[in-house]
Figure 1 (cartoon, each protein chain N blue to C red):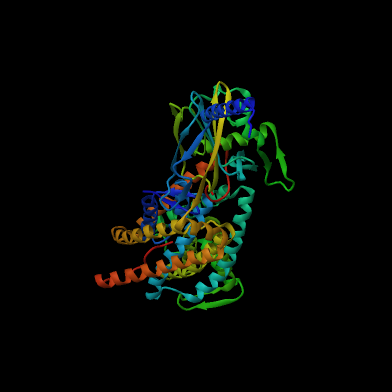
Figure 2 (cartoon, rainbow over the protein chains, first blue to last red; figure 1 turned 60 degrees about the horizontal axis):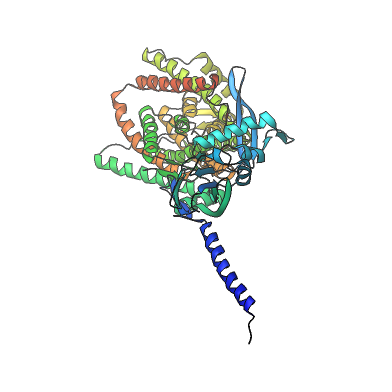
Amino acid sequence: MLFPKHVLILTILLFFMSLTFSAASAGEELSFTTDRPRVEVGVDFNGAAVKFAGRAPEGSQVYVKATGPVRPVNLSKQGKKNFLWLTVESVGVEGMPAFFKVLSSNGFNHLPPDVREETGITGTYDLLMKNARVAVRNEEVKQELVGRDASAYLNALISVNEREGLYGYVEKGIKVHNGEFAGTLYLPANVPYGCINLKVYAVKDGVIVARDSGRIDIGPVGLIRLADQAAEKYSPLYGAASIGVALAAGFAVAQLFKKLNGLLGRQDSFTAGH
Amino acid sequence: MNLYLAVAGMPVNPLIILGLGGIVGMMSGLFGVGGGFLLTPLLMMFGIPPAVAAASDSNQIVAASCSGALAHKRLGNVDIKMGLIFLSGAVAGGTFGTQMVKVLRLLGNYDVTVKLVYVVLLALVGGFMLWESLRASRGLNRHPTKAGAGIKYLMSRLPLQTEFRVSGIRASIVFVVGLGFLVGFLAALLGVGGGFITVPAMIYLLGMPTLVAIGTDLFQIVFTSINVTFQQAVINHSVDVLLAVLLFCGSTIGAQLGARLCRYFRPEQLRVLLAVIVLLVMVKLAMGLVTAPEELITLSGAGGGH
């Protein structure tokens, strides 16, 4: 079978070109792994440090954004009424993630506006606040707050979350060396249960050159899982069990001190008060 | 090492919780009344959410009162008839109080209401105890006060009068049920057993002997705290059984140490000391109500981070 010469040359050229392109795209690839895809909350849980590492294109800076589950939160505002500091307004906040942390190998100011908008990494919490809704709770008609009224609550919530280690921007929290990067994401003890989504971006010369994603699942295990589920889903049974444990403990202590008093030859005395 | 509390949603140092239970238990053993009314604010000071602190305190009161009531029953200090009638009012008051907790939490005024009621009660109980114990130390308590005599007269005019043989008194069932309702309501609202109100009321208003008042109070508190714990678990999901167990372990040991320390004080000296402690707690809580908070906007609602 005859094979035209120019077709053969074109095929060989295409083969080498594809090799070249695949090599180039391999250079732009981003790989990312964590040392623990699942964080278990047990009786000894006191927070966790999740280590991550990977390869990023040569010369790029790495940004990792961790966003936790979105949960409604209630806030109260104190005000002075008749010499007493009382709750003057209660609101519900929806649309704010319960966990939000960004780590980077470089400063956040280096990101151009379009990259900031695309990634949601702005160095502030403005985008989170934009997507949140604040409504007064103790009104029969749900009244949504906007502008400065809403911002006051959202800023307070962000301050609380920052203080508790649930929110934060960590500049230089990622080390990059020879195309390899590594960092640690700290989860405080009160981290919410659920999935934390991880978005990883490699940025070079103001352009996103590669991206990847991952997740960390956080959930209770053992006794904590049992107690948490029982308290929420089987509350009558949990309540009865709590009472049973307390009655058994009270009875056991009464018997113990009765025996101890008997051994010491003393008259029975009453034990714990109330 | 810290221990994670499933319902509170936060880790605590178990030694601190045992210590808190121990301190309060020692006060119980030392002074004969109270403990729970100090424990809830102490737990709040250590970061436990108010609703979890109150509900778990109720749960530990089940254990503590059960232990104490069994000891008193063996000594013949429990008036079961009085206890059961008192209980009927206390169960109704406890159920009503738990519903009120739910409403107050929705309104966002739970914390401040708890503090306000605490301040008033602590001021009344502390003030009365200080006045009464100082009078006792001067030998001036032989005759009933005008207010006490007035209440006794009112009680004798109410319907459904009956004999309470163990207590050796005659009283109106209506009055006893009303007193029970008030105590049950406060127990649910504040997460306390109510002993610091019931025992003085039984002694000064009903005229019961001190030891029978303490024993009967413990007997009925077993049931009221069971009711409050169950209601809190079902309606508010705020009972943390691990926290309650830690508290109880501490309070029983503390109560035994306190009971042994008792021998080194005269009764009126003990009452003066307790009155001073109660009044100090009252002043601290009152200061919190009249001074500006560090932050005007705070998280509200029970439970921890989950």
